[in-house]
Image (cartoon, rainbow, N blue to C red; front, side, top):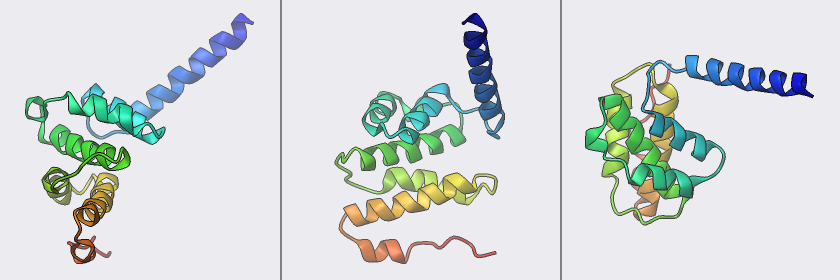
Length: 134
């Protein structure tokens, strides 16, 4: 029985270690937590974590962009009121300038379109900046 617990513990530790090595940036732990909550389909909890954070107090522009992306994602998936696209624009502007963040750039474009549609202007979502075609 103890052997199974030790193996389970070591397996979890290995997965967490490998997942941590995957990231190019060392993001704020609260942002990683919110992203994890979104990935397991718990947007309300992610929205709670993100709403109490002061984005201006985050240490880097990459953290602020990540916060903007996750906040928009959590708001949209929680059916919260979205009154403008200014939050997702922070993320989109940042990720357009940083080539190593293609996954987050793609998510930013997806949620830019979703927010634009929520705001009642789906036509402009279709004419927004396009992803570069290689």
